[in-house]
Length: 83
Image (cartoon, rainbow, N blue to C red; front, side, top):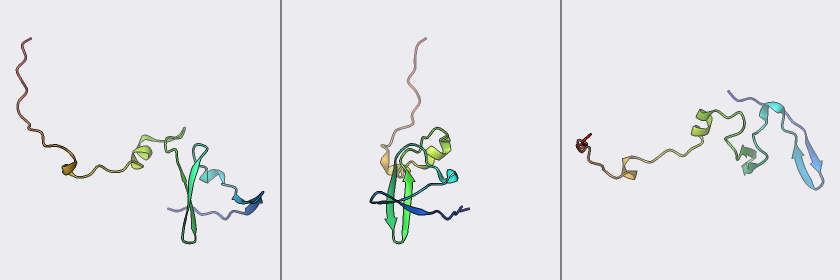
């Protein structure tokens, strides 16, 4: 479910700015901004903010490739050990 809210644009010196409403606050003090056509996308650069959940952090990681990324390991019995 996507939440939407209208915001006002304003000038801060020679820059255009927008206030981010509380429900859209990002963790940390930096973000990445990019333009996608007519959209302006702002993403947090710190997924591990003070209230981040482990599942949210793991969701930001790139998935590992297929089985080709790992060397084949024989699955033989363990070596005998004298106790």
